[in-house]
Length: 375
Ligand SMILES: *Cc1c(COP(=O)(O)O)cnc(C)c1O
Image: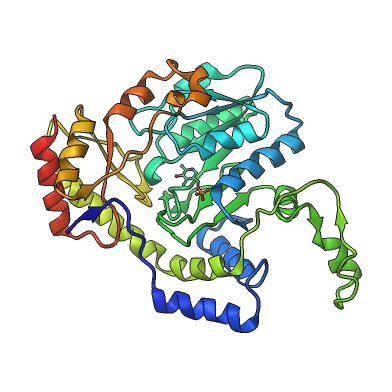
């Protein structure tokens, strides 16, 4: 039977029960389950603020807009970012009229603090850090560097739901952390995300901007009785980016199982690592010390990646690549050539099947084929 890279697993009956509550109550939109999910997320991560959105992508867009406005960033100001990411991280910079400046990655496939330091200019306003596969790489050093230089830190935590370092959930030391609950992430809904600012005004602002700029507080104050619902203020143009109660209902159920699922992911990763120990043709990605990774991905590096991919496909095993060096894309080609380690990784990395349906036997089968064909 074919083995896919990602297969989301849903607790179907429990999800349907939560969704049924929405349908019976007649409340499927913003509010109700979205509030319950935000509360549950804050409790789980111990992050002070959380706002539920319709994706991580819009969260990254809003993160830059809100930080930029508060801190007075100007068009053309620079955000240091990684070439090894899903394009959302970099598009979010462009949406806001800022300039993505690509820095290189280290062995963890996350941004290298030394490369960031070398790219800092007078116009650098923020660093976009992506925790690839749930790993943190040298994130702590990057935070330190950002604080030292007065640069904001945005954590794209799309792979990091449940990643803890030293027992603490990631995100507490970033200016803003954005999670993804897209269909194949390790906490899947269908499409949604969570934005967690560290500053209360930013959190207040994102609640308005994600709902067309509508200031709900105005009518909450003046018409708590339910009359005058149209008497809100709109201070500035906002977007339709907030999440809804159906997605939140699924998220609430999935969150209950997140730690259990992530523990199984770590088990799978350990099985893979054991299979590959001593293999010189299959290189592993080092984990940051003290980390309990969400392990959204299990990646290896080989020198004949494309050939290996085809050989695995012939055996009905379908791995993935996370990611192609973004500076190879036409729209980001200005950064091409500046990040040799990312460019090399982009040719070598392969993400092996990682989901709740994979068994130890599958790992052994996949690993033996990888070992057979890897060069
Ligand atoms: C999936 C992903 C995103 C985008 O998340 P959506 O919720 O689909 O918008 C952003 N960054 C990374 C690293 C991702 O993997």
